Image 1 (cartoon, helix red, strand yellow):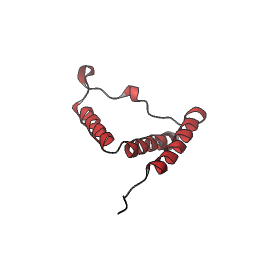
Image 2 (cartoon, one colour; image 1 turned 135 degrees about the vertical axis):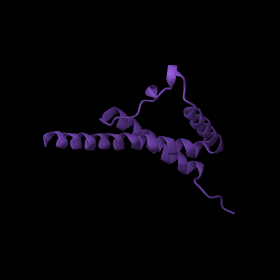
Image 3 (tube, helix red, strand yellow; image 1 turned 60 degrees about the horizontal axis):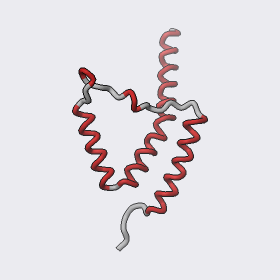
Image 4 (cartoon, rainbow, N blue to C red; image 1 turned 180 degrees about the vertical axis):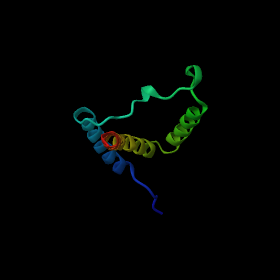
Length: 101
């Protein structure tokens, strides 16, 4: 029986391409990427319970399929910069049109 899913060799080529594209996009482009230094905190600077649940779920997924989870996570992060930048430009244009009326 064949095992479903990607092999390690296929993931290594995909992850190498993602590293190159992300590295170039981060240093050359004007895309804005999310900074994890500014995570929303709860009262008195404590970590909200929801963040702890998310952290435990991410760790569980990393234990189950580390290569796939890391590939998916880095791919989502790589795509988030252009998406976030385009969404911000669209919102800025909409605000400019509203104020011009």
